[in-house]
Length: 280
Image 1 (tube, rainbow, N blue to C red):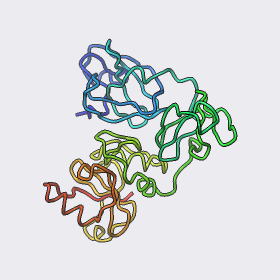
Image 2: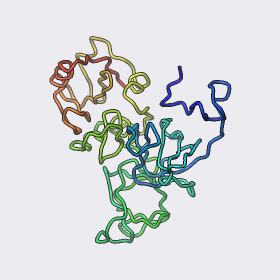
Image 3: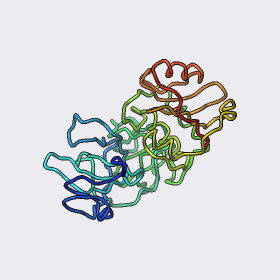
Image 4: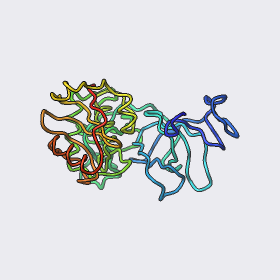
């Protein structure tokens, strides 16, 4: 059974490339759009109160296959393949390829080359922009926004230690489906951190357990290393060192550092055992 989270197919419409593989009333080629909002929600259903599946950051590309009359577009994120409904107003046709990305945890976009101006928007780590030139302490984007130069890096810039990226999120509020430094969930933290370090990563924890690294043996589990991933049903944490993990979790409603044994015991008491430990 194809995973509906990654398969752009509904009874009414499906992606052209799925013709012959799924049943749908019509098949469409789809059209590529760019996310122009700082953070755009991707929801299960075309409604503002529908559950948040994930988020798309500024500059992400989305292939749109369908639209409704209530201002929602249905499509698939090009980065991790997630399918859902996104506000049409958050999208525009791409005019240029992104040249840079936000490397700070978050930053402000100003309407002119001064930090005293009221910011136009707040961008999170991983947002993609097109820089047309440097202007003193700022990078000027093709939208006429001024970003602090030290807060953006080249599109191919890579962090050396993805765990250090995750540690920068400590204190960030927990948000189901969140994928930004304003609110993040457990698998969103892993995805953002690995992506910043140049490693492709699926969106949800079950996909990450299936798709990342190799499973540790019982003997290896006694000697965890920085960057190992501990999985439970519906949850994932990142190993920092021999005794601690960093994870976004609903118990603390935040990204926190926690003693590994304490966290495993606490989660076990809540009814969930460790399902795997993976090493990248």
